[in-house]
Image 1 (cartoon, helix red, strand yellow):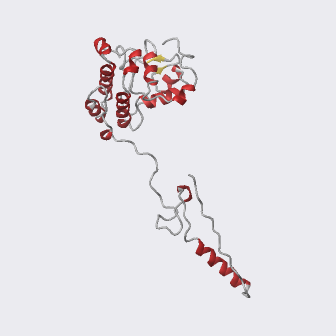
Image 2: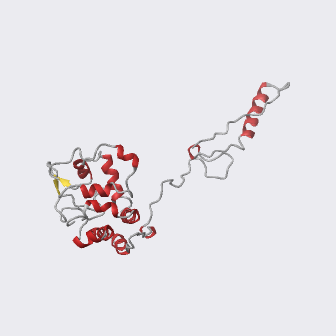
Length: 245
């Protein structure tokens, strides 16, 4: 826990060459038009996958299944361990590789404290105003490791996306990531009531302490490493804070 404690498409049109007919019977004339049209399709090309393979090409036959165009998920081993604070993220990477989510969360908290500077290190927790001093490189590394280990299910960026989707309303957001329970949206007890497992809901991990308020979590969500200028025009973040926070 963080805190205390924590295409343009070009379709080549078929333009048969002008055909001059002389005294040719009607049936033969129709056959000649079919042959002429077929000859003009040999050079038909397209740069759009929506149109299927080009006629006359050596590509897959129509109806054949092609590979997915979805962007492949970056493997955990391929995540660059960048750190402007000269921190070593290999321990976190290894814990995540072993799916030790609870231990990985502790390591994440430790790295945030170290990246936040001497004050955070001395008190052993991060104050919300110190988050902006954490470099984008370090924040992106932390997030990329969580994202890669969970196939895009966990991490700060996915949490931010869900927060924005819920119009920055904390109650709705906490329900979406399953941090609260019951009709009264009671915050789950840490750590026993949180779900440190692969089957946890999207955005459930890593945890950030919000019992004493949401300013720390908001500072992380609004960090330049994750925030987009366009999304800041969404509804205000403090308009619907639940009283129990």
